[in-house]
Length: 79
Image (tube, rainbow, N blue to C red; front, side, top):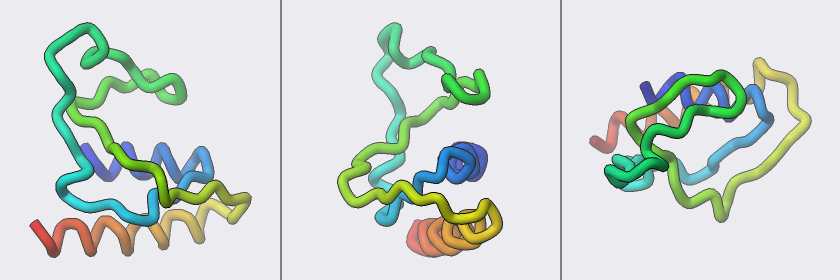
């Protein structure tokens, strides 16, 4: 699920900054669609794209979770 992927990004100290519905895509049906996460080993049935505005931070996990929760809330309100 998207929340798990965003939490995985938070663990890696990455904040997307511009997460929207159209930036969550189904992968092409080739071999790359079955690649698992190098961090958790999970395989997601979507890809989060467009990290041009992302930031990498050394912020504590709690702050990252709060920022990602706000992004997810905004994303789901716009669906």
